[in-house]
Structure formats: C-alpha cells, structure tokens
Image 1 (cartoon, one colour):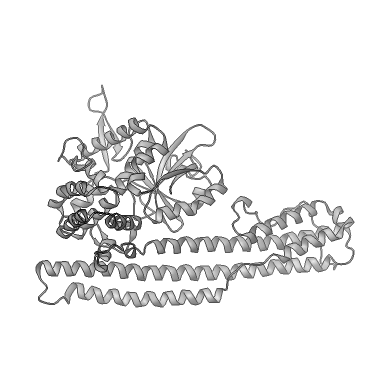
Image 2 (cartoon, helix red, strand yellow; image 1 turned 135 degrees about the vertical axis):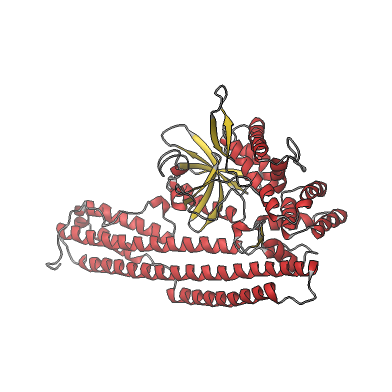
Length: 550
C-alpha cells in the first residue's frame, strides 16, 4: 500500500446517510445494501480479515460483481425527442381545430346544427389537447429520467473504481491496519454505488408513476359499446363542467366511469337501452349527457335514470346549475391553495355555514360547508362525500332533495337547506354503519364503483411504500381511497379520503371540511400531520390502513 493510504477509524460510518433498507426497491439496491453491511461488519473486526484474508476479498468481489444501473440514457433521450416532436404535431392540430370552431364552420351550419358541430369540435380539441400535453409531459419525464440515469451510471462507475482499487490493495498480505483502510475505502465505494442504485430506482418509479397517470387519461377508447359512435365517445370523455377540457380533474367522467357505463349499457335489454339512448339524444348539452352517463356508471336502473333526468332536464343547458348541484368539487386544481395550503370546497360559492349556540343568543360558530361538525364519526362523513363525488344522483338528493335518492324539503336548494341535508346524510350513515370503515365503504362505495373495497394494513413505511402503486392506480381511474391515520403515541385515529394523484402529490379530503395536497414521501414516512395538526409530524401523521377497490 502506498503512503497516500491513511488509517481510518474502523467504526466510522459511510460518508452519507444510508437509505432505509425497507424502502429499497430493486434487487441491485438490496444486494448493494447487503454487501455494504458485510463490509461494515468486517471493518469493525479487522482482525478477522487479517486471519482470514479470503473473507475480505470475497466481500470485495461480491460488492464489485453486483450489476450497475440498468438502461441506456441515449436510447431514452431519443424516445423523449420523438415524444416532443409528436407534441408539436398535436399543437398544430389544436390550432387548426380552434380556428374551425371559432370562425370556419359552413354558413349552412347554424342554430342546433352549428351548436352540435361546435360541441363535437370542442370535444376533439379536448382530446388532441390532452394528446399534446401527454406527449409533452412524457418527453419531459423521459428526458429527466435520462439525465438522472446518466448521473447514476457515472456515480456507480466512480464507486466501482473505488472498489477495484481497494480490491487491488487486498492482494498479498495486508496488515490489520491496512485492512482497516481497504475496507473503509471499499465501504465508501459500495455506498456510492448504493446511492446510484437508489437514484436510478427513484427516477424509474417517478417515470412509471407519471406514465401510468398519462396512460389512464386516454379515456375515449374505454367506451366500446355498440351504437356509441367514436365522436360521441370523444365528446363524453372530454366534457367538463364549463366545456370541453383536456385536464382530467375538470372532466365530468373518470376513466373507470366511462368503462363501467359502457359495460352496463351493453348488458341492458333492448328496451332499456333504447330508453337510455333516448335520454342521451334528448340531452340539452354535453354536460347533461355526461352526467347521465356518470349516473349510469353509478349503477342506477333505467327507471331511476329517468327520474334523475326529469329533475335535471329543465337545467340541461345551464352548465353552472348542473355543476353546483351534481358535483361537490372536493378537489382543487392547484396543489398550492390558500396561505395554509388548504382548499375549502363549498356549494354555490358558499364555503361556510353558521350555527347559533344553544342558550347564547347572537353567538354563532362558523363551520366549513362540508365539515362533519358535531357528527360523532369521521368515517361516516368522509364516505358520504366520497359517494357524492362519484354519484351525481346521490349528490342531487343532497342539493335538491329530489330524484331517486330524494331528501328532505324537495325542491329547496338553498345553501342552509343543503347544509342540513348533508349533516343528515352524515348522521344517517353513522347510524346505519357505525365507525367501521369497511362497512361504510360496502354500503356507499361498492355499489357506485362496482368494486369491493378491501382493508390493507399500512403500519410501516415499507408497507406504505408497497401499497402506494395500488393507491395511485385506483386514483388514476377516479376511485377514491379511504385512509385511516393515527398518532403512534396515542389511541386517537381519524379517517380521510385520498381523492386524486398528480405527479409526486396526493390530494386528501378531510371531513373537517377541507382538502390538502401532500407528497407521496410524506404518506410513506408518516408525515401527514398538516391535515390534522400544525406540522407534518403533529396531529395524526401516520396512515395505518387504507381501503382499496378490488
């Protein structure tokens, strides 16, 4: 060994913190972690390798023999370039369609015909806009992955070189002190390789998540029912509350609802199908048709759908009325809403209600509109709102007291009346299903989604990391995921509802009346305390179970 080799403390730790082994994903990362543990153990007992040098050389050879990060950055960058080119092509198509929509329709297309043509073109604009945004986001994500993969490969090569030099120094008969230095250098190199593997795995997970979300947004193909022409499928798929939309959270129908409605339509009798198609044909706007399709996806019979349409048909050409009365809008488009990061959903512009205090005239307490208030259970309240978000017939009952689900004071849609119906629904659900999350989901969510919700324990960071892809897959399909949080130091617990995923973030509705974005990392690491307390580790920070639609 040369003079440059300096003795090191055999108990010294690696230069950077090691990742939590329970969160390591790939076999390469797990193997490198095991190799690093072996090197650290030998480094703490250098006399062993002096007596049995083969043991030290074997550990070095093992660390060197583990493959480096998979993938070819050049190939990935080339795919990213092709995606970017496809995005540019779709931008040009959107521009052309926009010109046609605004000024180039034939002069003969006026009145209802022109309106229908404009709606159809609007749907196509929504579809093509989503295509160019998808290609654009895909190109950026692939380019980012290529860059991180290059960094990971360079880092891995540097670590492997450190290991090779240490292996060369292990030849011959090193002294005990020399073995200390060899193993310390080897541990540093192995740690460098491990950080490279973790970087690559994290980048790959981010890419897979985004590509999964983008794939789920391709929705028109899910309507494959005979008799529903492709243009109608496009129009249904990309209709938002105020017009055609390329942004999934703005669209009335989720991918799962499009698919389930198509399947239910196929299973109808000829008479029922004709009746439902007549409702669609008579719809006064794409929004009315989309909400009919959404109601079909919720599992209602044709007779019930007819009663629903009877209520909404007079307002069919009023998108604002339909939006206010058929969708609670629990989610926010912007992950950064309000000074505290919280978004407060409401009804017809009203986000809060006031309640007189018994025995104290003039005193009022302000509640968020969809807060559980004094209802004794969060499970009942959060599940009611998840149902309302997925089921326009149920929501219509809350806002008007009319339709198949009905309610008190039919026809009264004033905010105070609606607030009371919501509270009645919370309490009725609590009286019927109690505090059992599985029973609440069975009663209110299974029939609406067509799935059976199953409880999955997430008591450890590793289990939360493991379940995260399933949570995201459900959210990508527009299916809410109940999540139960706890303070590990107490018996306090609370249920909330995960309602959306966007990039590295999850959106969670708290039945205390507001919605907030958190990161996936906070979910995994038990840092959801902002939703119930003053900081990520305050309140009830740890998700100990989720309910997944199966």
